[in-house]
Length: 405
Picture 1 (cartoon, rainbow, N blue to C red):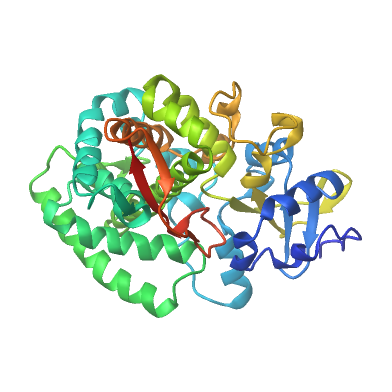
Picture 2: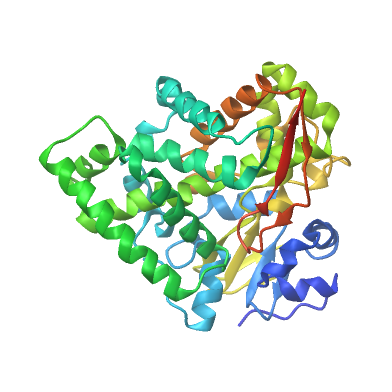
């Protein structure tokens, strides 16, 4: 049983497991927690809320103390608490070292910077295709850009037939929404009932006739000298299409939003491609596409004079760490595309669970901004945006924008 905490920093701190909390301004609460109670016990969760940059790095570096084997995101904690079935726990998200490393080897070499350089033309083709399909200079950016781009990139790399890409976007959207508590168990069951047989059919094709695609790579992969089971291959593909796309979707939304809120810097980005890589890193820091991940303590751990008990759940709030004043200075809340240390962010996690698709996500967004720069001199809002009600993703359900000369 974790100890109760005497510090109450805000009425909002009793809503960490409520998606509505993330529709407000959670950064006010995060800042208060960093100052007053950086290792905060949230009894209604129940879980610890960790908000400091150095503390999150420490926990991430010590999987022997804080495990991912049972929980990976806040949604897992909520489902465990409420007795709701969650996702399979034998995917890479739910593995600790050394098993985690063995399973990362399945695709690690396919997502390195060198490999991303080699497939840039494929990514560029998808970017051009998505932008060519825009209805004009005014459009809803989530539906037209953020959702299709990363899913279509992975569909192309996996070898999904082009005619099926729209179906895959739908399936992926349902799965990513479920991580933030936005889909019912019935919707999830119906989605998996369609998606799993579809992927099984593609996998069977690859076994009979291998191709030059990621699905063939996964189908032929081994762990400890043994081939992956058919279900493991299926879940690898789902991980790429859904979890692998979610960060990029949210990053695209955050980049476009930031450019509308900071039009001078947005115009600079569209005019000067050299600024884009740094802006991508700053957006990852400032926006933090995936707000948090979770761990479970394997033993009692002392952290900032608090005792985290064995079995306690721990929420690592990347969105807070990425605005920690001790790391980023007094202007941590500002979006600054020339920030020199932006790349030190934790948006892709840290240590063993660092996102395998980080290099690909960066490349997709860089190429998208460059493509938009060939079409416009600025970006502005074209209507009222609607934030997504999610405990996981920092994004929008609706982001109407307009490209201007």
